[in-house]
Length: 303
Image (cartoon, rainbow, N blue to C red; front, top):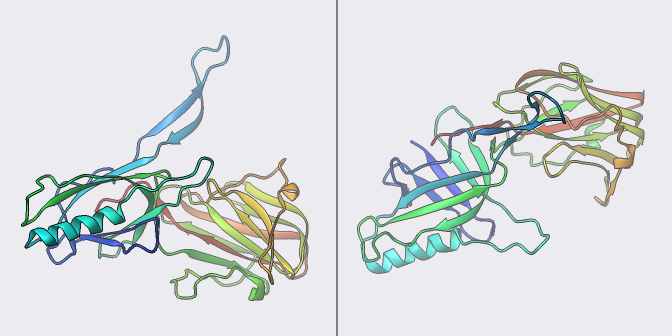
């Protein structure tokens, strides 16, 4: 048994719940789900003049298109019209101004077993008209979504805490089931996902020249200069949101600190699959601590 919950980009619109049993508000039509499997990766190659063959440079995973069909038990034409209006509102296409950033909706998958609840950020692309406009009984609608970021991610965040005063740490909802480790300067972090996971780390306390290193892979993020209790240092390795900022702990005002990022030795690394030894250090460490927050990601999620 599985449940899909679509939360539209407009958060004022009620979510749509689609299930695999007849008790769900909308029924997932068996065999209709597509686009939930692994997206194919396309290698990027480059060939220099006179070079025999090509050199692999990168791999691209394109946007994911998800489609499925839903049905609803309608006892009258009026009920069918109401259900059509409900779906039309929830899956309405949203316009994005030129140069603007689209607001993404969320498709959540709960398989009602020991596996985590997963989420895919997406935009509504198309909602079909009824296949039979006069149908009452179990009318069927076809839904199509496009996900610019093709990976599924766990709904719940995971937190790894390094030592230091937690009073200026990253403020996050307290009701989430944290994977909270004890306070030390290094941790073995386990990523259960099947693709690398980006993270956000908030460094607080007092110290200079902070380095967050993945000892296992040899990658690091080094930021020069001082960190003091008045402003936490926040680093994001999230695709489309890579940043190094100072955040005032009182006002929340953000100031870029990208000029302090050591481009010669640093890379916005992500947590690879499996275990990584992650170490926080500083040249002069009075009370440096950090909260590292991330969500495991998955290449596929079958309902």
